[in-house]
Picture: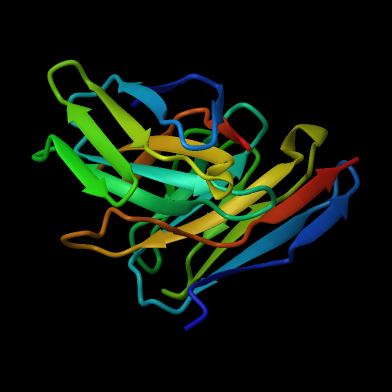
Length: 110
Length: 114
């Protein structure tokens, strides 16, 4: 099955700085790559996604890049704010089934 | 439109007891999923369903059974609970077609097995 690795496991950034989370996947058949944000005690919420026919996608302060050849994709958060503190999960999809990374705990320091 | 709902929110079981977790969605989605979430391990797929009357195994199916008798409901059963099944369980749903890969999650059920 698909194996998704996510790094780093924890990330502490100063408010206003950028945060980058990287993921790799193993199965070249994966064609959809969502990122979820999960606040403490809450459900995972989709924040951005990218499909295999696109190299980059941006939505305000967040962006995702995909390198199909290298089988890795990244989440970029610019101008971080305290409300960005959460656990972020990447995932890769094959035939509507998601395989998740282990998560990155992001802490934004004021 | 409530989206995806789960009952119960929290449950404590003794080893060997059984229980059923209920997931309901009102978005007319074809696909439904059950995940478990453990610290440091992300979400792992237990079972999933591609439509009413169908179920399939995911990554960690042992010790669980599921049923999808109605399109809007997906039940997860534990026949004989074990401490290793202590976890947070999330249900999700998605639709077929363009953009249908996006999964929408329920609020979760926290299960403690003593």
